[in-house]
Length: 219
Image (cartoon, rainbow, N blue to C red; front, top):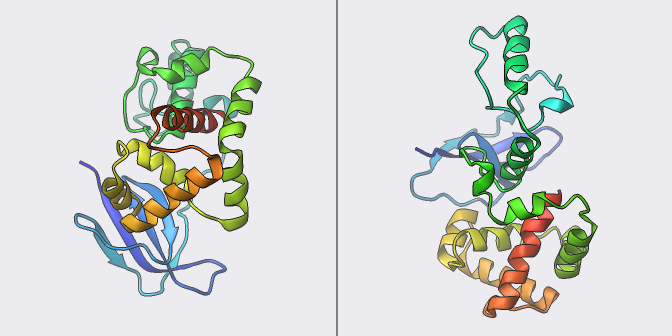
């Protein structure tokens, strides 16, 4: 069962103004001063208290990246068992396994068990070692949006991705983004203006979606 928490009146280090933080299933989703409350969301008022990250061990080998959750868990929590478990698991891992986990991380599906042969369009992308043509295509379609976001600090890319995730349903997109329906509609219209493509046109819409998938895959 999913868990959503909204922390209000949060003080962040180095910032004078209070803000709000949205956490879904243990993942920080949004940080903004104007996040609205919604049904089913636990609201926690910190009343101006300082919000800081917990103590973590930053020591991480790069060859472990995107392998979390694979193999047996370290039941004792000791370094010795950790080394043993990693040695046992590493021999069963493949390049496809690592790539699949990397993609799932980018598209926010880390809580799911998805096999390589279930990756669909992404499985095709993984077969290309030369990613330059893919990057050119993504830049051609999304370049104006990316440049605009850097200047205006908007959420056009996030809104467009969520819109596709919600089967192009405006209200569901607005609910998921904690935004007003008209705000989402305006952002999507801005996307159409910047890209010269229309969500109402099936070919244009498919191009936008493919470009987004490629863009996040290459990040």
